[in-house]
Image (tube, rainbow, N blue to C red; front, side, top):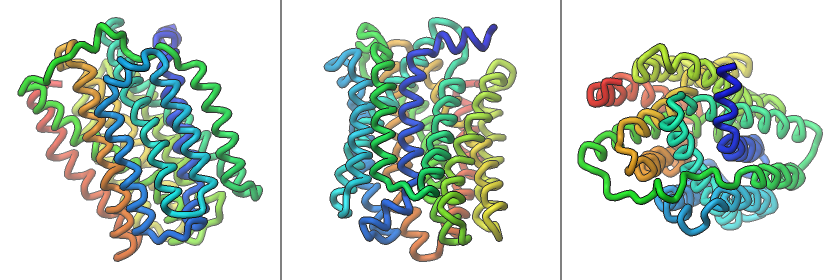
Length: 381
């Protein structure tokens, strides 16, 4: 009964989370094909995603303004932009075209991401219930389903254009369900963040950044690692993002149940260390099965870090600054998609994907022992 109530409270934001999840899963499961179609090296592809990430970061910074201008249509328009951008990416035959297409998709994704997270935080405050992990769990399950479906289509010989056309139809349906899910206009009259709030935003943003870096590394490069490094087939390659998404969904459902029983920061420390171990296992794996197990462990661990951090910043800052704080944390966190792709690409080109994933594991371990304890000392959470 309690779970049904939580789903009812989250009904509208869920469409936005599902849209982001299924869209990026479809794209990342197609990375080997899309990358080969434009003839890009690891470093070139990473730099293309770096440029595209500007769109997401700018959109997140301006999300409150987008809400004021577009009102209840801000999220649906963002979802449509994601679908159109990804279809254009599938049709592109040049690196420049791919970059422009992903810029559009990233911009739409940035708007949707900030506004649905802010809306969930507002519902948490008004209802007194913990809902962030539940909503992020649906994102993860949508991601896993999208990756599995795309892998099956690739295995059957279906090209990326058809896959992205199907995705566009799905996103149009979700856009129709996503009206009026952004925070009310009266909640957006927010001033500059106070010094104490800025410190919390920087710490929380750093933690979210490391969580997203782990997700981005697995989403964007696991298929290449499984297919190129370990010799797996197209279906096996798509299982990397799928394993991440499925285990992240299960982990977030567990996090939803644990949220009322354990300190947020305690769970975040343990989860980050588990995820670091999983990434390390995938990095040194001798075969596809072991690597998939590593990515699954990484997904289970990292699943709760970003949702708990987002929920925490939404609780500890004044209500009048909530949307601003969440948008700033999102901007910092999405820095992972800004420097992550070129970092992974450059390290992979110079030392191989194994070393690139070992680097991610090390950064995640540092987050667990430094950043999260620092946040705990300032929030008592």
